[in-house]
Amino acid sequence: MTERKQLFLNLFEMACVSHITHGLWPLPGNNRERFADLDYWTELAQILEHGGFDGVFLADVIGAYDVFRGGPETALREGLQSPNIDPLLVIPAMAAVTKRLGFGVTFSTTYEPPFAFARRMSTLDHLTKGRVGWNVVTSYLPNAAHNFGLDGEVPHDLRYQYADEYVDVLYKLWEGSWDDDAVIADRERRIFTDPSKVRYIDHVGDRFKVAGPHIVHPSPQRTPVMFQATGSPAGIEFAGRHAEVVFTGGRTSEEFRRNADGMRDAAERHGRGRDAVKFIAMAGVIVGRTEEEAADKWRLYQQHSSLDGILAHSSLPVDLTAFPRDITVREALLRAEFPAERVPFLPLDRTVGQALDFIGGNRDDRFLVVGTAKTVADEIERWLDEDGLDGINLRQYHSFDTARDFAELVVPELRKRGRLPEEGSHPGTLRERLFGAGHNRLPDEHIGARYRGGANLDNPVAPLQLAKADVGSF
Image: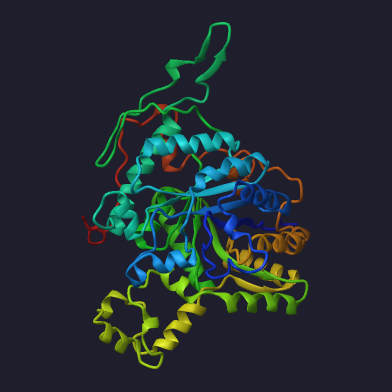
């Protein structure tokens, strides 16, 4: 009998009040306002650990949403990703109360130096016993650039070129600076580390100059699992070179498969196999003991959803709510003296009301299911078998009810169908859960593996190739 494809199950989290389900934090019993309490994270981790989840995926931003209405006021009122604490710092607390739960954490390559981040991630990989992954982002908020001394955002594709060198420095530190057997802890000879097995990396690039050696000895995975969320041409090329797990999506099955195939093609261009990359999508799952109970929950969430929060999150540069609902978007932009070419995604010939209803109600795509555990499990099996999905980031509508509902109702059904590991299984490292037992380290064909044992440290890798028209400049 062919083994059935298993789901990689993450909870999608962020260390803030309103992450991606805007307006729902005041609902009865919701714990979102506790996000800055350590107990919130340890309680959540135990729910996930005992509930059959593989991991928690932690999003992050390093700036305020201040484009909509010309300032951060709307975002602040909504609790939209502000206040927002550092997600790297909650991982050790969650790791201390769990044994198998993995952690995917977001960190930007654009503004902070690579050496310090290499140390933090190696530390987390040690403290979690190899249960950590890094969601590589380049940051997109204008306010983030202002917070780090720039007048404006670094152009999109240039950020990916910077990121390519950034991760190259990290691979040299994580993979090439120390040999596996450098730490000998020889009490008799009073030698802790064999100096002959630790080396400088002496990286000198267009953006970074890093001597090394790495200041942390090899961790269980060395390089954390490389996650990436992308869909742009530059991001796809970067993912083909570096990512092991890609967070993507699509409004239809065909769109998702097209996105995934584009990244598999990119992986092949960089000397990797088409199966080198796993795919996860954000999924909305509202489950009840009856279809009516699930539908009631979904109606409650829809009724309390905040349009202002959605518009602020989308950084819409023109406030459509300030115009009559019965005029066209084109007319509203004319009245606002706002160039239509700056908002090509808006339907110019629809009414303002239609556009706002579309924006407010169009937050879900192919990966949404409302129903009983059987209905949900049937749909998840379609995602796995027909769409080719490998895992989900479960969207939270309510903390902790979303996770509890899934754990209590859906997980037993998926286990019965062979789609999740049995209770009590212990897969080891995060990379092993994703790619199988014994796969603790980057595969040999991955570009980061070229530095193992100190090889190629003086042989610069060719820069990531992007179309010149897409690169831009300051």
